[in-house]
Image 1 (tube, rainbow, N blue to C red):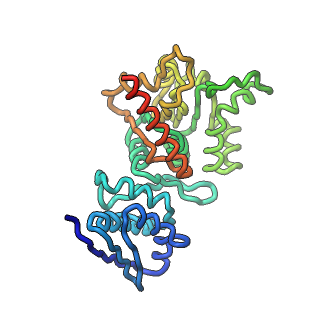
Image 2 (cartoon, rainbow, N blue to C red):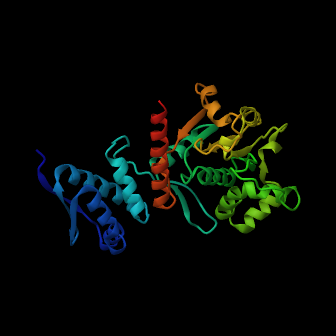
Image 3 (cartoon, helix red, strand yellow):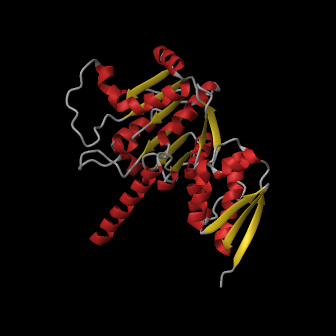
Length: 325
């Protein structure tokens, strides 16, 4: 039978305590409700009381939150909820936190991974020439890839950044778009523009775009080219056909790196066409020099409600598949 216990954790200063507890103690309330414990603080000592299992889990979460504070980050309820959700699995290094610095934005804001899945994604990009990242919306697949591209460019590891997407409509008929060719493809490529704009800043981004150092183009434009010394990102790759995927992967030249991102639960291809991103997982499963990274609903870093929506859809779809058997 489980017994009631109390654990104490030393808090260095009041600033650390304020960060840990959050505005109106919201962070600690999340911890208390999720693990059924009571958390109090007196002077420089934090006390956690409750049943043994909950107290041990809460103490481990607090310890990791303290490591995050040591890195200069602000604790949010999203971080607390995430650490609670992964803590029971005990798959990660006990002294490792999910934060991994990538680069600074033009305004000096640090870009870091926020989940263990994102951290593995960044590690895979560092170590491999080609990385496939598959996961739901909101997991930072595209944004982190663009951040790593900017980092490689700033460090002169590549001379160009090339961002591409298949021009497939997301279940809608957009009709004839006005303007020249660039105006017509811009709506498909807007998320890539936005990420570069935010990380590089407007002036640097526009200057590099005009010089051809940054290229944002539909996937069809990649045919017949060899891309050397480039950091290439293929976004929304679930909407490539197997032929398009092969074409893209064979464009990669010397001293280049390619990141392919997509969500295989949101394929917008016509019903009779296969997804190149689904098929490539089988074809390249045993090829060295590349890596497949899979993110899940736990890695969603948008509003917490987005994570709950994704989880609800997964449960509904799984129930439907079970009913078909």
